[in-house]
Length: 405
Image (cartoon, rainbow, N blue to C red):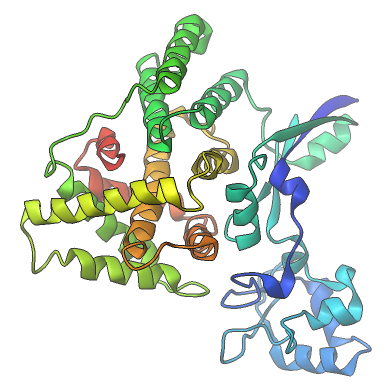
C-alpha cells in the first residue's frame, strides 16, 4: 500500500454544468468525438429519434476506439442532439450514463503522477471561468490522502512522482501571485524576478534554499509595502514590442473564430484602433496605448474586475493548470512569458472594449473562455507560442517585462 494524494481546487468541487444558461455552449462549434461503445449505443437506441439522429450524424473516423466517430454539426454549428430548449436529447432520454466520454467529462480532466492526482477543469468553459474569477475562494486547494495498492498506482500512469524542487518552486510562484499588492501586475513582475533568480542559481535549491527563501520573502515584503517592482520605460520604448505582440497573437489566436467569434471581433477592433499601417508614428501609438492603460486602471477600480481576487485567481489558475514550472526548468522563463502574454492580451482587448462601454461579467467571461479555447485545447500550442515569442522578443525573453504595466 502507498499513500496517494488527491488534489482538488475549490472551483472543481463547486462546478455544476449550467446547461442552456451557459454563455458559450460546448455543444456548438467544436468537433465532438464519440467512442466506439457510445457510437453503437446511439445507433441501437430504443428511442427512434436518437437512433435516427445517430444514423444521420455520426461520421466514422477510424481513429481507434476513443475517436471512433464524430458528430456532424448542423448549419448553425450546433450539435444535432440538442433540442429547441438547448438541452441534450441523449441526457434527457437515456440519462447521464449514456453520454460519450467527451460529453460526460468536459470540462474536467486529471493529471496523474505516481504519488498524486491533480484534478483540473478547463477555463474554456465559461462557468469554470466564472467560478475561477468571481469566487474569492476558488483557488483554495483541497488535498486528501488515499491508500492505494502499488499495482493500482502503476496503472494510473507513467508520470514520475513530483520532485521536491518542483513542489517548492510551484508553491513559491503560487504565493507570489496570490500575495496582496497594489495591483496584479506587480505580482506578475515579482514572479518574473523570482524566476530570473532561480535561473541564476540553476534551480539548485538544495544548496541555495535559504537564499532563495530570503529573496522570495523580500519580494513578498515589497508587494505588501506597495513598493513597485515595475520599471516603466519611456512612452515609446515598448511600443514596437506591444505592436508585435498583438500582431502575432492575432495570427496565432484571433485568426480562427472559435465558438462565438468574440476574440476575432475584438482583435479586428484593436487593429482598427491602432491603425499601424496608416499611423506608424511611435508617439501616436504610444498615446493610444497610454489611453488603453488608463482604461485598464479604471476597469480595475470601478468594474467587476476591482475585487483583488479576480485577476490573481486568473493567473494562479494558469500556473495550477500547467503545474508550473513543469519538469524542464529551462523553459520556466518561457512559461512566464506565455503567462504575461495571456494577461497582456486580455487586458488590451477588454480595455479597448471599455472605450465604448464598461465590459460586464458576461463579456469578460466570454473573452477569457474564448482565449482559453485557443490556448488550452491544442497539443501544439506551446511550440507555436514559442515561435510567436521568438518573433516578438528580438532574442531577449526578458523583453516580456516591458509588456507588464
